[in-house]
Length: 287
Image (cartoon, rainbow, N blue to C red; front, side, top):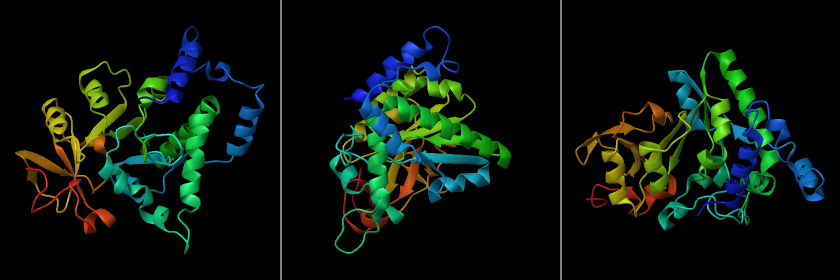
């Protein structure tokens, strides 16, 4: 099920781009400027940062000439609204939302400033889609300028800890930044197949399918169609089920992976210590 917010965004973008085009018409998008709720929302979220380059995984791309920024929402239903509609029980159980500093809590507490910031960022997106879009536009523009100064190619990941269909409601954003490489992982099989077979109107938005404990058959179909599939291993092999395994931990630049290959990710943290069908093990896993 798609979020109502994305449907609202789609309608707003279609209205604003119908005649004069996206780039010149962002400022004229429908705005509920007379609504005290929206005004309060924009005041509350005005200082919030949507994107970050501090994620250790994405920083590895610099050595290959790419500069990535990423957005982290509160995954699954942590914000009160589900932003991971295809998440499985094991995906939720071992979510990387609490990896690194995001999982460090004071004694007796079950949240921290990082988790609360992700909730507020998600609420901003849900409560004020137009204000959110305006801020996102500014941050991507700033990221592109910084990448150019550094002599690197700009990349953006909007689904750091979410799985939203940005191509549905935010397609004009991809068109505006046609020289930016957008990319994400997804567990939505329908979305992945649309990416591989069309219609797909955002050519600079790359998707990698993610294996879970419930979608083995779908993984085979994605591979057969030329897509790549990210899979968590207890120990990453060189080949798996007759196909090469690309090292997905060396960097996060999935759009550079060979098509039709596995992307191997080594189990980390809680997932490395516990039994789960979410990862492929040497003594079981997926046959």
